[in-house]
Image 1 (cartoon, rainbow, N blue to C red):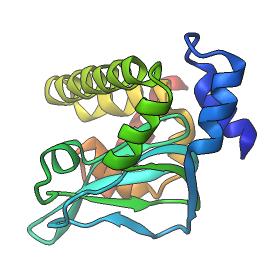
Image 2 (cartoon, one colour):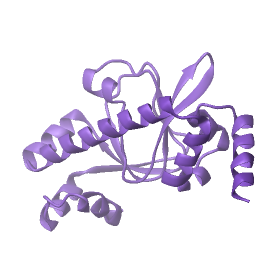
Image 3 (spheres, rainbow, N blue to C red):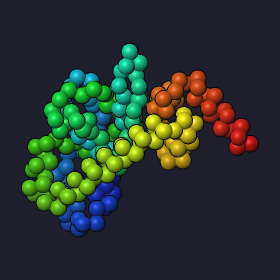
Image 4 (tube, helix red, strand yellow):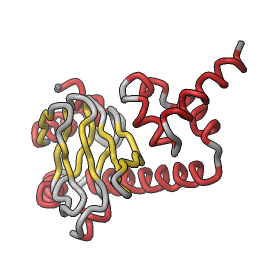
Length: 193
């Protein structure tokens, strides 16, 4: 576990080795079993996470159907941002797709950590800005692309995800039915031959 935390913080060159070690010792790390629901629609989010190991899925329930909108894997931050920051009920669910090891943060813990380690404040802000920008780009791509383009993008940029989550969830994430994903995969394979 220490290696995973060290890898997480080694991405921030403004922190020296001693600071990384001290921060790592103050971070809460918890494990969750596959299927654990971290947040339900209607709950106010009190925690934010960073994935050290595993995969988390974000989904909405619309007319009784689950609509997957995001997957989070190692090195990625996970939060129901508007619920967490504004203390309003979440509109979506967060569930562990695999057994997960996560850092767990709260507003109180964030304040405590920033007071102990002031260098964390610009890092946290920068990471939040990066995540917001990434989410904006992903939404724009989703709106302006075809299901085939989305699938090719997934193969290119997140190939390991395809073997980690059920195909019906991949189909939902792409905005198509599982049968359509099967046809799409066959079409792409036939183009390669």
